[in-house]
Structure formats: structure tokens, C-alpha cells
Length: 443
Image (cartoon, rainbow, N blue to C red; front, side, top):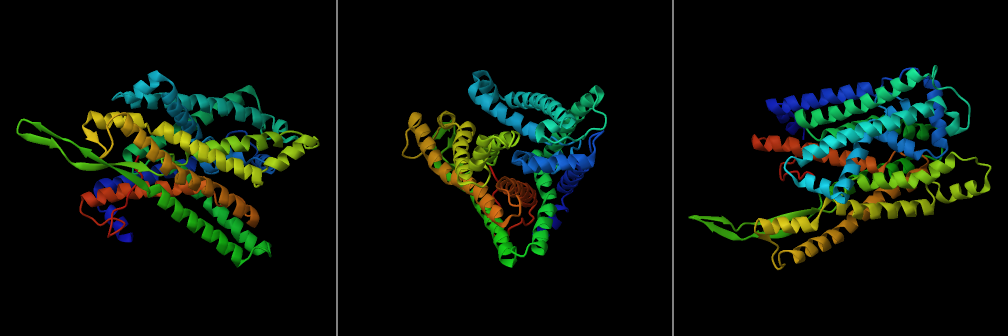
């Protein structure tokens, strides 16, 4: 692997792309430490501590994607989350709205969809920026405790915060597109990955403090935590690279003196076609009731009872969380993959699945196969999201092991390594693995 990285810097184009990617990521991390104007840092830290104590796991999830910029209220506080939300909304609308579905199939339709996604990102950033400015001005409405986070919360400050947060998200989106175009790897995913890795030292510090200050947290607990991380990474790699290959045969066509077609290939169907999206959907939905109850007075009897039932870590909470992930996995896989369209494309280009008639039977066969292979992928997503919660809650080490973060980091690393290896292979250099090629995530 070390030799592969050395060979990567021998190729001028690849070296330029790697350096460009590193510089753009450094710019992103620098911006993640520039605080919004007029903010009292100590009051802000106390505010977020109160939020987390009142069941603010959604806040922690957003902070995970922003690389800690949200809890520090920097110019990149919103991170890339509005862009992800806008992308998901556009993908869903492309299935529901016939005109958008038709547009997505056109040659230049993807550019239009991308443009609409950018507009949606700006709109969502403005809405979230307004909400954040109002919350920062009146934190007692959320936590119930008086405090001043903003030194001079006038109208100009509100406008400046909304403009800064919107511009920050737009700039992060631009950085991601520049990395994709001029660098190596998928820009948006790399930005999220760098933010997750930036929080790793904090998790290691938490474990070290537990070893020092908590007598019950010993070597056995540390070994269990390390084993959990290793198993989660190995399982993520296995599921990410798992593909069901459906054999496809193309009929021979004689055009003049040439014989076209006749070759055998395969139709790859990924076991985890939905990626991390089902976890994002599920965690947002499952955390909404506890977060809402956390803002209500605790002296209300029914609030205490409801919180006890659906608090993170309870059996009801974990069961609903797992069911939501499985359901959203099937839903998003259906949105991403259209068996009818795949069958039509095969028939259009003279392809067929041996033993299956073209048309409706091919579509039904692909749909049945996709339904079967999605189940282990969905169960794995549910397991990697729920099991770390159970173990880390028992060890009382916070959310150091997060299923979504492991999925993102492992997937992005595999994608980036696959792209680098393709450059090395084309120029007759050895890749990361001598005996076999690395299979990246392909849709």
C-alpha cells in the first residue's frame, strides 16, 4: 500500500489531483473554526450542553456531518446538510413528478436537476439560518433557562447571520464540486468524511478519560469497544462490495459484413444500494419525538412517562429505529433502481436474461431478485445502527461508534482508493492489492 501511494505521486495528473483535494479540504477545515460574529463562546457551549442533556441527539447527528462546526456555530455551521436534504428531496420528486422524471432521462436533464438542487440548497440554508438566528437570540425558549448567547441581537445581526450561514453552505457545496471535478474522489462525501474524522480525537480522549477516571471501565471494556469498531468496519466493507450479478446475453446482429453483439455480461445489483440514506431518514424521524418532549416541562406526568418509553436506548426506541431503517432501505432502493426501466433498456439494446422472457417477466425477475438481496443489506444497516447504541450505552462512552459515520468513512475510502487504483492500473503501476483489483462502489 505504501508503494502504491508512492507510485501515485509519480503520475503528474494524479499528483495534481491529490494535492488539489488536500488543499481544498484544508480550506474547509479552516472555515469550520471561524465563529459567527457577536457570539459568546462560553454561553454557546453551555447552551449546547443543555440541549444534549435534554435529548438533543439530532443536534449531535447534525454536528457529526458538519465536523463539529454546528456546535461551535462557525460560518460552516450548516455544513453540507442542506445540500444532502435538497438532493434527497429532488430524487423523491423525480419519482413522484412525471415532468421531473422525464427530465432526468434526457441527456442534459441531470444538469437541470443539479441546478434545481443548488437552488433548493440555498432555500433550505436561508430557512435554517433564520431558525438558528432566532434560537440563538432567545435560547431560553428552548432550554427554559435564561442566558445571553448573542451580545447585540439587532436586525442587522440577524441578516448577517442568515447571509453568512447561507454563503458558508454555498461555499462548502462549491468546494465539494471542485473536489469532484479537479481532485480525486467524490467531493461531498470527502467533506463529510473529513468532518467525521475530525471528531475522532474527541472520541479517543473520551475513552482515555474513562480509563483514568472510571474504575469500572477497564481493559476488557476497551477491548470490547475496539472489537466492535473492527467488526463494524469489516462488515461494512463486505456489504458495500457485495454485488448480485445477473447474467445477461446479447443477441448477435449482422450488419453488412460485421457481426455485432453476441457477448455475455452481467447486470450488477448491489446488496446495499441505498447506502447511508436510510439511517439519515430513520434517525431524523425517530429522534423528533424525544427532542420535542425534551422541550416540554418535565413536571407534566405524561411527558415523563413518554420520555421513559422512547428515550434512546430503550427497547421500544431501538425496535422502532431498526424497523424504520429496514423500511426506508426498501423505499430508497425502489427510488434508486427501476426494474421496469432496466428491462426496457435491455430489450432496447438486444439483451436478455437467459431463461427469462424479455419485457414484464424480466422486470419481475429483477424486482424479485432486488427484493431478496435488499433484505440482508437492510438488516445489516439496522444492526450497525442499533448495536453500537446498545454497547456504547452500556459502556457509557457516548456516541463514539456511530453506524452512519462508519458507513460513510468506509464507503468513501473504498471509492477514493478505487479511483486512485484505476489511474495506477492504466499506467501499469501496482495498485493497493497485488493479487486482485479493488472493487469500488458502483451503482
